[in-house]
Length: 437
Image (cartoon, rainbow, N blue to C red):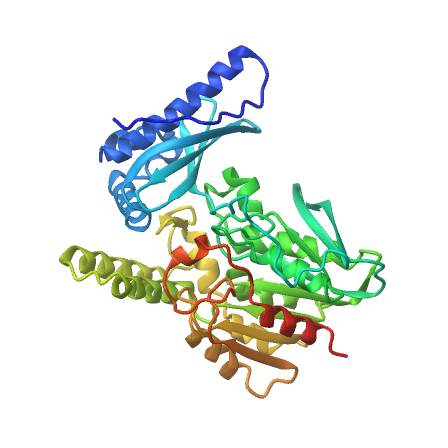
């Protein structure tokens, strides 16, 4: 059994009885990881509630744990634990140490102390984050706000140029998975960099906490990009155009990765948008991009083993098969490659390039040449697909990665652990494009 070192326990409820109960949940979470580490996947499955147990078969847990350890190394210990209460659910966050890195996981328990959700949390930036050199703090202010999206409250940051009137506004929309308002990944905060950089040049912005990190328990069954991204992006955009200091005719959407893929769809619904920025935006199906990523990492890690090839072949087969999923072909809450069938059906039915062709908004496509997550193929698919369309601009930044920070090679996610910033030419070009008459 691993030695668990619990460094911090945040008890949000005061009574001793409830505190003891919370510690029980944390201990259960520890035991779940112990079962995974001992490769006892049947035992690990038993931690899940009956309502979701059939969706987490032992072989799926084995595959998931293998993928985690391939990325992070061998599991060593739990170095920290936090707890919070969300409605009727107890949420435990464990900070786990692996040989190559640390990673936090969120475990959601019902009142029977059974797991109903298990999520890998986005990497949080370390405390050594410093503002980029292009941030002039004398030129802008930041204010925490709350935006209501249906029944959901979304904490957000409004960044305004000082003494601003009739300034342009940018709303930042995240990539896939849970994300905070800064889109923190490792030691980097690309949305914060962009917000302060643009504010220093007279452009306002709003960045918000993604629903998937705040209401994780809502994503256990069938859902689509509407619940994950679109609804909240629309709510924030509508809030943004009413901010007194901004010009409501100059509201822009900056969509990163999945956010860029969905930006045309959002713009087709919110016709007041002046323009959209497609930043490292997939033009293809996500399955094709995943296959490309898998092949890249097999080559990058020089994995020539039979096991590696078999895993790649199986993954490719499953990803290709998921491209045939529709709203009627399979039960929508069936889990395919970690996502419900409803999600795949939603993506499969969307052609983001065709939607973009019909827009009347300005479009700016930006892409990093050293991006190993979304490649130049997607950039050129956007260019070719929108050929002849007016008010479309595009630029490649040869030496930046998926987060638009400067790197000398494609590399891997280890780049994100470096305290890098969005490259200044990217910020300068975005500001110039937004401020064009």
